[in-house]
Length: 440
Image 1 (cartoon, rainbow, N blue to C red):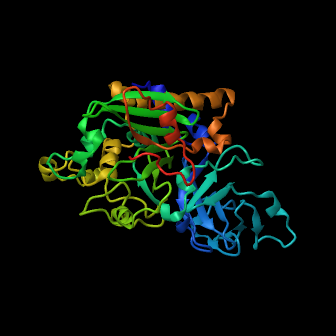
Image 2 (cartoon, rainbow, N blue to C red):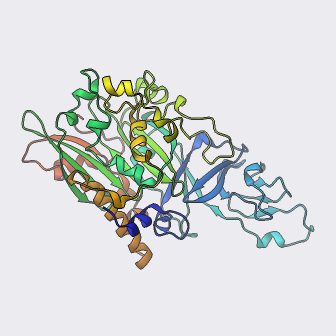
């Protein structure tokens, strides 16, 4: 159970907040490259409580600017994207990707006024289909992009998706480091389907081993198999808001999420699924994009996303599954087939994470031993955010991009072997071109 004070610190992400300033130390993924077209319409974006617009300039560079013109506050979402800048439609002021004013057509020709005006702008980088921004204090010496394996493999090996989840970022993240829920929330009650055959479903009382790492946290769930061997599923939590989920024998790919705070009450969910050294199966990619028999996979299907007005930040990434429609729970399905009755993996998670509202009062929780990973993740976050705010200490993951080269694993070991020993460690270390090294 968290104190009210600690809960407030964890969930508030706006400018000046403890967690918000901590997040601003890191590069933040916030769009897919395909969302921005050179000289195309600017997109409304909201990050860490700030309203912004993103655009791709004529020369293919990307800008992320304050949403309001520095002149008289006209919306730059209406701006003309032309000749390497955004031109406000109100009085014609033009801004480049650095927020500099390059033209003030209504001002005297010899005026130096434009030299003294600067719009808030954040630097952007693009890598392998993902657009990143840095909103932090370093202006002249930016930290390196993190070397996540999913953002470094070739495009045919990875599938990426975005959706908005209508709850606080931490509520969303915590579901992904909780290994105890899968056998229930994602399970079936009939005798069909792969879920019944998965190893982690056979033992529904795992024990947990949680280990601090330089990158964040490893949460290992231990289950005993029928032959006496130990089945270890090790989830990874990478600062500041990444989770990595182990592979399964039926779905041999690595998956994970970036739980990017839009504001205190909404989260941008970037999901990645990838194979470390082979292309993804076409069938797998179709399952992600189309769902299966009306049910969602780990990624939002095309049909799950709403056609929102362009006036909304992240228009096109809000989903049809909401608190207002009970995430489309089918009670007959719950009685006869699926434990939850909620149609698909990510929808099931979202319903439990956000079904009671955008920010849950964690002082009401009653946590057990199966929640040890969640308890430790909160502690790691609070300590890191307070260390930065009070002493200026910056996590090693900010300056060392290779700390993010880590994998979640699902290992079968003898009782004498340790998941954290040399045998397990070699599989948890990511390396481009290296296969799993074991059979998931």
